[in-house]
Length: 265
Image 1 (cartoon, one colour):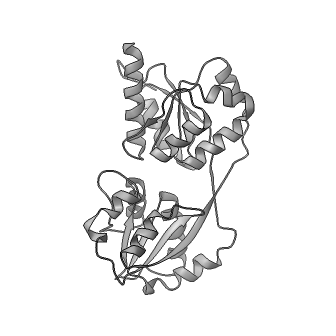
Image 2 (cartoon, rainbow, N blue to C red):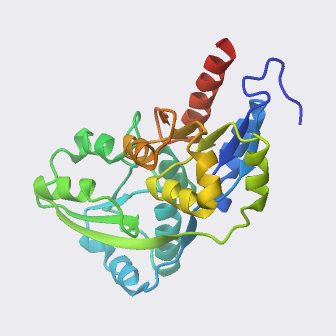
């Protein structure tokens, strides 16, 4: 790999904790900036234990005015089921929370998707004018198990009838921690990236007592204030860095800013 001159992440090792199938884009951005990405997946995306409820929702999609996809995983899992059983109803509006979800919907040929252009979370989606007047709408929210209730509860307060379709569940993968422990022991992890609170807690559990001592001393970049608060609860020694958006690009920009500050000390 050719590293550009004055690469901003030269001699910087980043722990990438995204699920194995979703780590490549972030790792590539880190490496293009001269850094080294160490993959250590802390989440596994699994099918629902009982897919019957999801199938029943899919079979009556014409009952809904709006379908909201909470994450790229929700898009992939739900759209693959939908496409295997039926076409999308022509009148069904589609919305999603983030840029990654919008890209995935585009991959399935979905256009005119309602999605925030700036900050990527439920609150940003709710601020959009397209969702300001939803009284009487029937809304289906495709999500993983145990998702946040903010979006659904707010739409209900606005007069919508909301249902949920859990199309995947998050698990803790079985991973060999020994290579990571060796890296940490020799000081070869400069910063950690995590993209959800569950990912953070899985990481904390997976590395065990010894790894936890190193983890809390390592700078960390997160994508929400909720996860930053969880870092403080777990005793991180430095203030978590919160990326401006929940995107790979924003994560890498946050790491670059952090690294530049380190070099200036």
